Length: 238
Image 1 (spheres, rainbow, N blue to C red):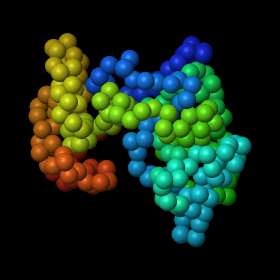
Image 2: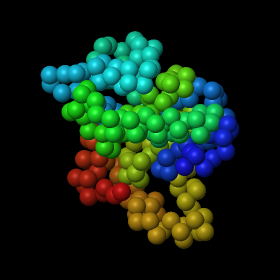
Image 3: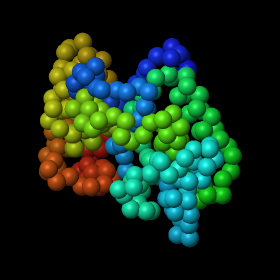
């Protein structure tokens, strides 16, 4: 996909399960310093009991590609705590050239997938390969976790909701209002009613039933707990 875009022109990639809720032109992108979504959990790696730990696993990847591991660390977080290590969700990312980004991403992804590394012997690569490689690419191209001011993407300007029950469970009223406003016109409704998750959650009111299951000011800390509560009431839909 990135290879089909014009060379040497800034781009922003968004997952399709993203709702834009404000003016994208107001986001202060520095396209020379790439970054990606920090709305993530500690899904990878899962350090085995007898090691290597987070440091050993991540350092092996930086070393493989000749990258400076130490400058990627968030030293405000303790050693062997997952947030100390550069890790993104691929809900959005950006850079000043889609070809440069895509070529490096492909190079790193194929190498991690195909070239055996002892430090990764106990690690699942699927479906995490994009999130394993993304921090390496961002770091190699001079970006990082602090390249974009907080509060815009995954904030007031965009919402990576993933699934409609999750949107209604945990997102702001502004996000829900935006969704229901853009889905309201008849020409949109005629198309979107063919998608069962939208039909039931947006047009038939199931989303409000999901929202009523939670106190949005005191949400469960882990996403799996939110999913499990929705599933227990029979409201889960992909």
